[in-house]
Length: 545
Image (cartoon, rainbow, N blue to C red; front, top):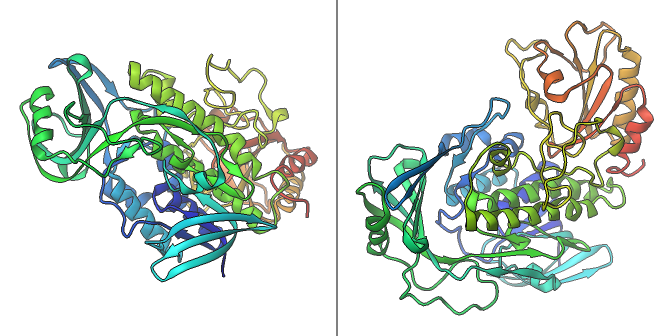
């Protein structure tokens, strides 16, 4: 029987992210997939700004920027007449914009990134059973060499809407399906519309053509399938690409002729498919030592490109927690926070994408930040320190959204995404430093904001206590406010908030400590002079040593 720390089932973007985050932390893992090769399909193409932030921290960003194209917005038409234009420009406090990248390229980049960490995808390797035993999971696999059993401390099911892992566990997957059938195509389009803009052209009776730009001047087209093409029998969850009828170039061109706002000729069809859409949510994201992520846990309309990006965030949330558990450093209950934090997010995304599929998306105000997945938060969650919240900073929860799902505030409170800021000055560095430059570590980060009256000994005591509580898996920095200068007695890395950008972004006060989790969320903001509260906060994550 083979052994590994974590077995990842499914080698799409979510499974690849989970495996990469585990390996980045030194965890032994295997990743298996039943397919003989990665699929050459441009299924998920929208890359959200928050995903680019994660890829920046993972070290994948430069290669993504080389291959992705900017997604500037969406042009809308109704019966050939121009409608509202959706501009996807974000304010300058957001470091990255919206991008388009076909899923086959995303998977290739992640696969190569994982290979650089010493792990290759094991193809034609299918999970056939799971048995949870004392302290491990026994997984049965069918491989090209025959049947195999693997003993793993943990298993992550990233095996899609028809997840074998979910079915073996008997986890409910309630929801419904849209009655319509759609068709997709990856084509070159000859027209005079501006580059970088998606096109949504509506006709009568719900007829629609959606064109999303891809690299090399290509587009992924999506449209209703002809009514004369019967839908395949539903053998379970009716979601995703179908294996039967595939539209021809002529089928796609007929819709383009009917709905394109400009005369257009399509060609060079790389692939096409018909597909169905469901909206479902798993009852729970974990069962003992087995976890679900991505489409195995939640499926919904592709409106706004939320599915793959949400799944990548699932994996990013889970990876660092599993790594601590494998090393025996996780506090009791840490792994339970995965469901507690991510299930409400999945519930919100499913509900929102269904609403947008039926009534549209305006992209105004906070709605655009929600689509960018910048407002996902874990406020009130088990790892967010409630005593550290800024009084009056919270706005009211929007009616109808799950508690802890999404909200905005002028200053980050525990559970919020930690915002970036620039204009930090660091010794030996001749250019301004971004805060995100400090957050690429796989560990927790402690930021100590020091004013002119902040005592060095309190900074040292706070950092020492935090480092011990985190078993050394924490990086501490002092951020000096304007008017405060580093002293010769400082034995911690220091930066200057020369332009006041950090104080503004975080509403920081002198002598305040900020704990940022490995997945880029603010865990606590507490007084530097009270290390005991800081240690108490970290005990929610780390086992006592």
